[in-house]
Length: 151
Image (cartoon, rainbow, N blue to C red; front, side, top):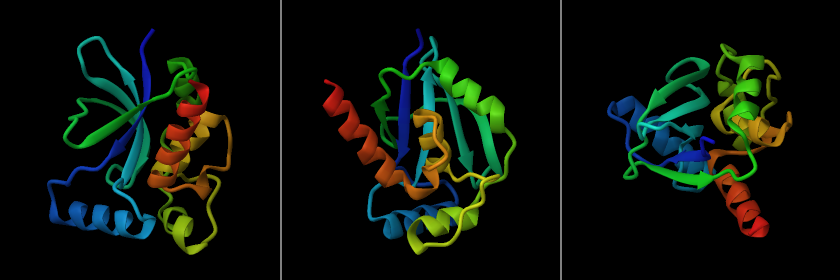
């Protein structure tokens, strides 16, 4: 079985605009993460990653390496790859929810047909529609604490 992780980005983007957006996200969400993905380990050491990305326009999947200098992985024990792919099939191609991401810290309304990264990941993990409440840093803390309680 392929292991499933919450991948939390703490790296620096290659482009100035990406670094600026990452910095703004980290500042307003009071943490070291600016983005989250759900990553399913592949036999070749890379990961099949699922998320909603502002840089790529919304909900998507892609295969990529996750450099440990830029990413922290938190094991999602009890979450199957099938659960993630099933949720992905329900909403792949949905637009990125920039106002929802801003609303996470500023109280703006969310759009149920659009997703930001931690919203999408939360919903996929917990089978919920309440992910709009959580930033990448909040989601990382929730998952870490739940994994401690399960052990």
